[in-house]
Image (cartoon, rainbow, N blue to C red):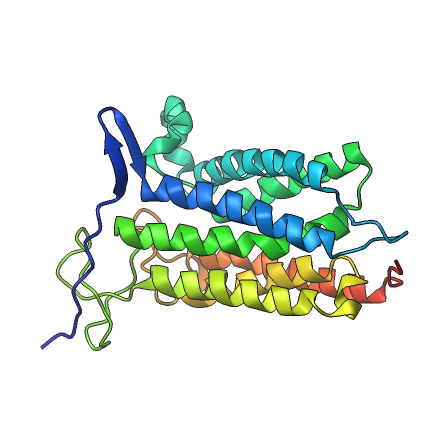
Length: 274
């Protein structure tokens, strides 16, 4: 007999008032942005740069949040289009703008945020690496909330696991009990990575070497997502790719390499003295 626990069927729609429909997924994005904004202001006020002033001011953070949000949405959508369904969107280009139908790629969102952050720092005369460290320390908040929203929606489920006591039968995934891989990712990419980055930020030696936290984030996310992919069902239209890896794992490899390289680069740089 297969083991399984009941899937907590939560309505994906959080609020519905006539034509106004607000989904948990949208609330996850909004909450992640607001919580990240507050946490970023808290970190920045306690992270002095050369001269003793914060590496980025409060008003500049308010503007940066707008830039980063645009980077997440545009980069995440284009990343999904290019990485996961290029053939479909090439034939249906008007569907690219229909973001309410779903389809966002984290790796594309990373590229979008990096470009937005680089342009913002260049225009404002800020340190790209120092500000990037703080932004990376904040990102896991949104990651964790997003994965919880995936779980509520009953999407991006895990691989069959009939012998796992906590396996669940997802509404649209057939009769087999499966790993709740969304919760694995929420714990690894969200909570654990957030805690690791915060503990490292508390170390003066880390704060004085800009680029270290960003490198740890890239490395940590790559390892967390790559590990969780062993329990997550690959995308049906892609399946398993090179050497049995999933698209998510292949996209994590350059993140891991870049993360290690960034950590080594930061260690060789002279420390910043406030």
